[in-house]
Amino acid sequence: MAKREVTIIPAIKPKYASKATEVGRKRRVAAYARVSTDSDEQFTSFEAQVDYYTKLINAREDWEFVEVYTDEGISGTSTKHRAGFNRMVSDALEGKIDLIVTKSISRFARNTIDTLTTVRRLKEKGVEVYFEKENIYTLDSKGELLITIMSSIAQEESRSISENVTWGQRKRFSDGKVSLPYKKFLGYEKGEDGYPKVVEEEAKVVRMIYRLFLEGETPSGICHILMAQGIPSPGGGDKWHKSTIDSILTNEKYKGDALLQKKFTIDFLSKKQKINEGEVPQYYVEGSHEAIVSPQVFDLVQFEIQRRKELPTKYSAVNPFSSRIICGECGGLYGSKVWHATDKYKRTVWICNRRYRKGTIAGTGCHTPHLTEAEIKAAFLGAFNKCIRNKAEIIENCRIALAEITDTVELERKAAELSEECEAAAGLIRKCVEENAHISVDQNAYAERYGALAERYAKYKERLDATNMEISRRNIRKSQIAFFLDELAKSKELVTEFSTGLWNTVVDSVTVYSRSKVVFRFKGGADVTWKIV
Image (cartoon, rainbow, N blue to C red; front, side):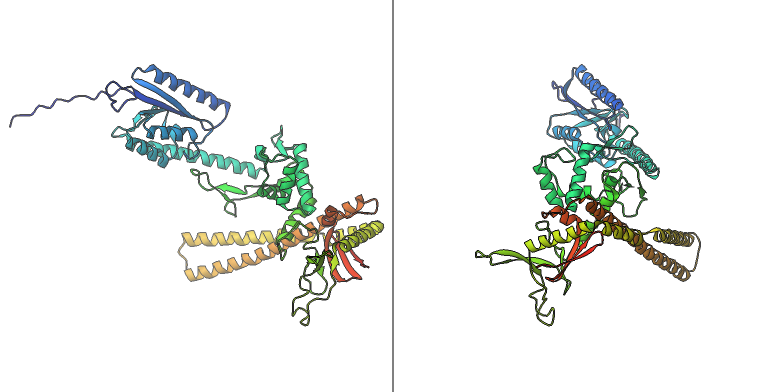
């Protein structure tokens, strides 16, 4: 057999064009530019990228300029929220683009999966991507291997950046430095010193929300009031949502404190966040910035939120007497009933919900009397005016009670001791586990030792939780008494008209024993017995 001659025909591949185009047709070329922050420096880089690729594509006679697709201030770790990128890919898949030019893999995406998935989708449609920095053509035989390697490196770079950012945030948390999402945080703006500064016009809205809630309104009812008055939401919209009111009423930042790291990022790629349930440290900073509502008002709101949750029936703001009037015979709640619903004698009365239940008291139900709304209102005015007449005596008695029943000094000392015991027990548990992991020990002995330490920790933790609960209860009681005293001190004259706001502010409960014995318990702790004639 004659020797075969093989002539090598070298490849001629011009830059930016690894795939041949149809004869006589220009290659439709687009570019992609992205910067990941909104800073001025990055904006300059962004403008430079757009200008560079526009001139580059238009300078080539064999290219037809399509567009420079852009994304500003968008992270590259996921393509999910990148409108420019997604529109470019859509146009390419629809046959509008032959070649995409971009600066580097890290500009295209820092997520290996996103990069490869997108490149393969484009490859199936014959669309090529060229990465300038890495000199990679995706339709080249070596392209996919190089992309996998390079995008993995970019992904690790993104992980490193994310970890550095997280470390910086936690360092600021541990130093007690407070930062807020000011654009959607009602009542505060960033001050010159970097700390939250009160915006008084917005702060008035926050205080109104707290006041309305303490006066008996529900979060949904507060939304309707705010919208009726044309007050914009924290985001500047016309509509208020119940969840927004709930958030404002429970955010400790409004009393000048800050609980930091309530949530944490569990995955740097997806940016998904999770409520912190002990996985990472939290930091509570007292007096971190200027308060909008007093700690007493904030605590009262938390108490009222919990009280409403624990009611045997769903809380209603339709009537201020709901869930406030108690039967002195069986301890049940009074509810409203309509009598003579179909005739001219129609009226609403309040009566024990167990009145007509068989078997409650010797098979006959309760015997406490029904009360009309007019009688309840008149009795309240009489009882509260009695407080005003005896204001000096009641205030003095409340202040004595305030000092005696709300003292937490000894409890706080006890809580500190129990906290130290818990930390010590937790340290011994960690040491026990580490020893078992590194040293060969008898597993039965290890299990017995671990169990004893865990039981010790649980015992101290239970006592610590109970002590903290009692401290919280006393602090709330202190706030209730102080709030009642403020209302009483402001009342210079006798009250002549019933006010729902005053009722909800000062009344804790009303217990009905008989028409001659109705006991009003005020939030300051004062009990006033009134007779309904």
